[in-house]
Length: 219
Image 1 (cartoon, rainbow, N blue to C red):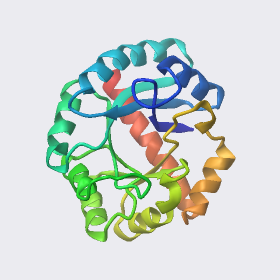
Image 2: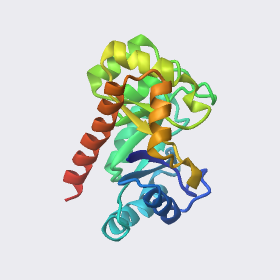
Image 3: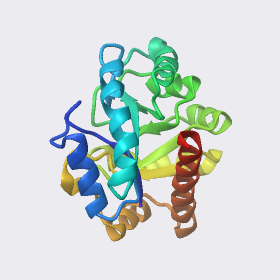
Image 4: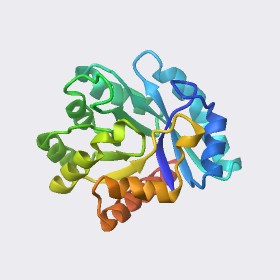
């Protein structure tokens, strides 16, 4: 299993980076990305702290670890700029906190994230057909999430992705050790979202493809 959406005490998680990595390893994950909530005020702080840890722990923790950010509540007009800045600071993955119905996310965030070329649009909520088509064109992945609340619109996200050929990945949006779900729960959430078994297989393959890209970039 692979989880590209993990939070630590650098934002709103109960887990320090080392604790998050350890619990992911114990739960059977082969790779994780630490992607704390970030904006223009704290991107540099987060990445300066997590990038060295990710490199070192990948060698000794028995799990591949990457460092990125989840841009959160950044004004839509500034999201493309923030994506560029995060990458310039060394972020290995850039996510944007999409327009989930469980949070007061500004309208236009999904579109700005796609325009900015993020790696993954996290829990994009009631994403429009226009934005889904643009995501497919831009190569932006949609997240199917196991996190309660955000998962309420997984079915809509899955259908939009299917209609427009958007690649999906399955993430936990982990904030606690219990959020690193087992393979059966992960599969059940994906099937419950309306993905076919073939689409679940494709989503897991997409995570492996992204992992392969990340490994090539760090070696």
